[in-house]
Length: 88
Image 1: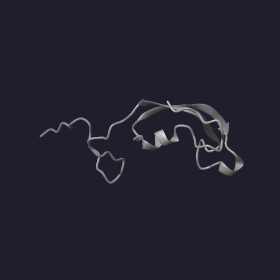
Image 2: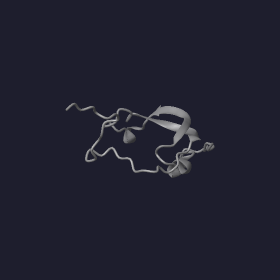
Image 3: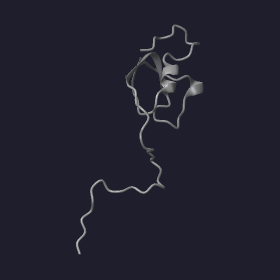
């Protein structure tokens, strides 16, 4: 678990830890949800008016590198999970 910083000028606690994790890892973030300052509000996001003031970060499950490349790209054809029966 990463420990919190006492000064708002310091980097977010656990940021260096989160930066090295894979996106598939599972983490817990403890902190306080606060309104963003007027300069940092992002109206394009549903959560653009709030942020989390992080106190601690805990890695619950660190993901290993995947054995295959996964992509949500629309250019990759998707196949059915179960075979389709055909009649002749």
